[in-house]
Image (cartoon, rainbow, N blue to C red; front, top):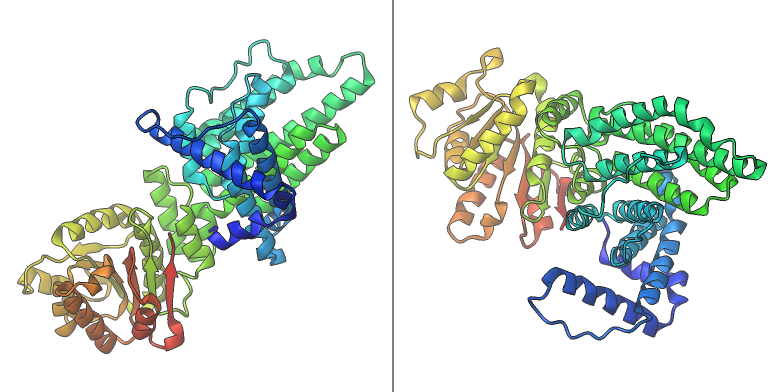
Length: 505
């Protein structure tokens, strides 16, 4: 994820500093004023006078940030290089460039409009502005239309169809968005037989040569698009990165040979956006965990159009070690609606896999009966199809006969793999040693309640009891914020070095 320090570094890049300090300050103030005006409309009067040179200033400033981002593109495409600083520079430059370019007027000419929208979208992806891009799409739905291909030349027909494919890839509202791409590319293959020859016989060798290179670039772009859509839907092919590299590098070479600078620049950004999309896909994360997680993803993507992780989820899993098996206690600070439940599900599946031979179980603790019921419904929906049993304990202060039977069943006869309960009820279960199987993981939702005078004592008592009675248990605490998260993680960990605080948001 992009941090403030990354934005400050890119603000001091030589391309940005080539503009005077007064120009830089003016450009950012104009951008902020326009964004505020757009957000509030006519409800509030914003007294910020603009002048005729502001549009040109925004374009020059956007280009400067984009130049800084382009310097880091190779590091983005080759993550094994280990050049984290250049990758961060690319993301921060794209972040800033998107902020400015989204304020530009949309070109009226169809081809220019297409290049503008795709360029803006790729910058948003590379700058971790996915949610902002979706908002921009919603605000500009009327102008993001696909031009008619009737009477269009073959190269334009290709471009218009690829534009439609990429709008679907960036938007990903539903299954149809990605499934339709396969049909569009198949249709282009059929159209090629009819229309291709019509643009390659212009009577001019120079024009024919330029068109041939343009078509080669578009064909490779189309193949890369098809591969990306298939991967986002199915998690295949496994070697997606190398295949994308092959087609985009060939497309860029062809655009360069044909002196098509605008297409070349767009392809470079779409190449990077493709790799970002793969790296953020739910399939890419699953490949390195275990078969249980892969099965879970395969099933959950059938039920809902979930293709990618949100940037905070991706950061927790890929950068901050949420699934590090050596870490036994993790405190996750993430805003509400940041996707904490999905992160918990990944960690739960990992724990069940680790304790599989011992029939280990997971406890999911929520502070209220209403929340435990809600979580139980979601976990059952997502886990039932992969054979993971989820049960919920009532909020009563004693364990009844039915619950006693549910808790004590063992082996193949066991009634649950995941148990959802309030802190008070789980305290009874642990203290009375009701479950004859090892507790693999406790997930504590809304764990910031530990700072509450009343609830905090109960939560602390429960955590201390589990730490004492279930020595092999791992801990995952989810909260929007808590003081001294690192200290809390170290206290819970089996070893002080095995505690970790993950802060995102």
